[in-house]
Image (tube, rainbow, N blue to C red; front, side, top):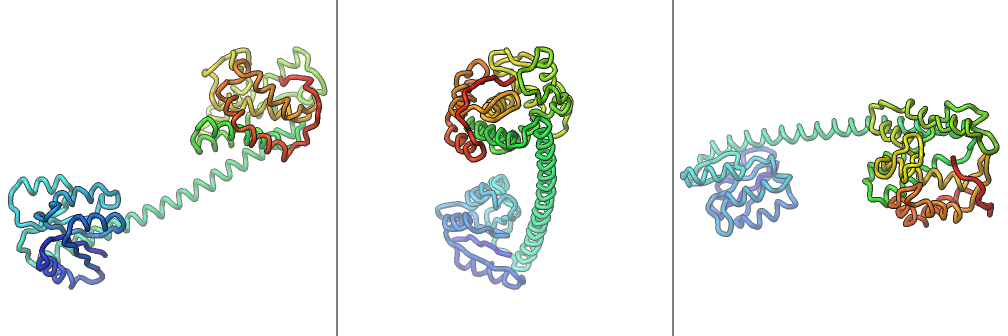
Length: 354
């Protein structure tokens, strides 16, 4: 245990050091200049501090107040050694954060007993902090394992949806990555970006409930079939609704809102503008862009530049202009991502995404 003594009297420092020297396993550090002691405390945490009241340059009350402002000294015991008996001095020291007082001239036996008790208290605080830290590490580890399992389940389910939809590539992965890039460019927190990344793969989970003949039809859908196809949004919301985790809640917002349009002409609710959840507005861009760049039973893949220009052209109509601007600012990264995984051909745009 480390003890700090601060007094402008060398004889007092010597006397206190001798009184404390009989306590086993402690190291005493002394300073005559209180300002120097405060500076040292920036980089070292003592377990017990004993300070004088009357010192040049800084009083003991000022020193205590300075130490209590440091996070590491919020609970360190501080004893004021003083010959002052005025009530105002003691009240000021208590308000500054003094733990105890010892009158000068001090009794060596009393000083030793007080120091031992306060060091025991400090040791108890440190042991509690260690236990709390260990428990926090255990909780963090368990939470990380649960998050990893949740993520694994999501990606396996999303892959099943992808195969059900007739897409055996990395569509969901690319949509999730592009959505995360847009979210980051919009200034969303790292935690929020991560939530979007994990929730995005479930945006089309409702396609599980759509008949194969409609889902994989190699051509345009009839009006009746289009109505049935659009039911995947409703089905997806039903699958994800009332989730207890924030991840499922975000996934529900994305599933229910990624086919809404900025101008209110989307589905299923026909809501517009900021009424559409931000996460859904982000994923809408990533989903449409990636789908345009991919071969589907009903269309050939567009070129990256053609798909990009379509996103730009739909700013303010289909898509949130701010999200489109963020998409544009991250274009270099998005282009690199798509070029790694897709063989974009020179096909001309032929069909819009439902």
